[in-house]
Amino acid sequence: MNHDFQIEREGLRIPKTAYQPIKRCPYCQSVYISDKLCEACGRSLLYNPIGIPFGPKSFYGMKERYIENQNVINRFFPQFENIKSPKAQSYVRNLSKRFTDLISAFNSIELINASDRKLFYVESIEIIDELLRYSVHPQIIQTLLEENDASLIGQELLLYLQNARITIEPELSWQKAFLLHRLWGLIKVEYLLKVIIITATVLTMAVGYKDIISSQFGK
Image (cartoon, rainbow, N blue to C red; front, side, top):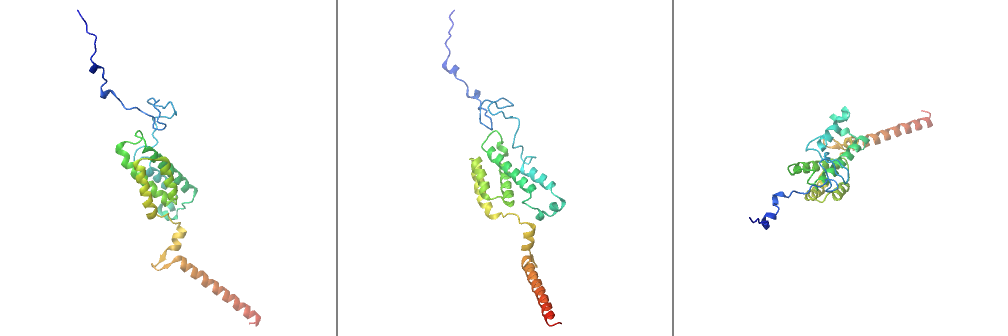
């Protein structure tokens, strides 16, 4: 009985369905990873710095917590907020960090699901608007984009920034807003105060001058 040990060449081919995409670390792109840890950079793969859309890590969660930590006056009258205060500046730094995380994640297929990319894109736009309102210079935002992102979404955000820097102005302090307010839509408070101060000064000088004249003539 003869046995044929020859194997057909077609039988040696590996089916395409057997190939699986190579998994890489979303932080350092190393292939030396386990289900829980990257052996190259040591970061946990169970931790997602982006979170979910509209979640606690998002801009919306950060904004909500920031408002909750404001005093009662600022909650109901946000125009009284001091955007240069340590609390406000800490909020701005957290926003910048969140923005950096988002634009970096757009370059990774591991951190953002395809179905969530549009939602995170909208969140990025909201952060740009908020940073501009808190007097962050547009060039700083542009630098964050150019240093952390090279994706198509990053280019779209750059174009949006160029338009937003024209249409969105930093929030005025309540003192400046009060001075620029027009009474009856006509007279600025700042102008009215100047008139009052000048008039009061002239009257004070006139009374003083009258006292000097009276003392000279003994009246």
